Image (tube, rainbow, N blue to C red; front, top):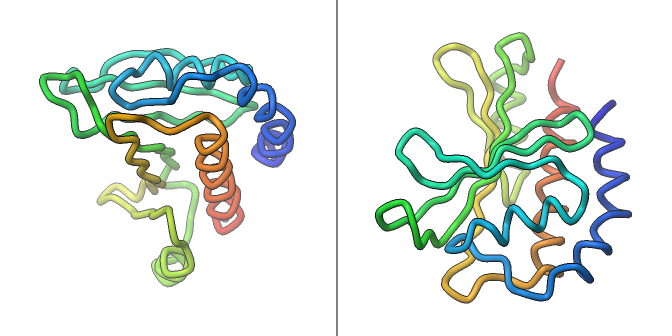
Length: 155
């Protein structure tokens, strides 16, 4: 599976990111989040979402996801981010399996919209001070585990 390659490569790359970034990673400074992913070799682009808040589009080893910024004031000074991955209606999972997966998770959640698309989310509060790159490595590792776990449930 493509994501397994992603997760394995991430373990190797995260040590590089820790040494490359000495400044905190802050939702209030989207460039620090973007730089983290660029430093680990992930093609990432800083854009805006539909309401003008920052958003990062990220592709890494065949896995595509977005990072949304929340708690923003006039599209700046955000205090949190959300990792997001969407799956098509063709990626099937029963409602019971989806509920069981959610019940077994501490950090992530997934839901299905009216069109059958699944949406996986994981929120991180960075506050004003931000988080150091070592802690962010751990948070991103949690995200990769969530994606790998959920994708294993999909048929």
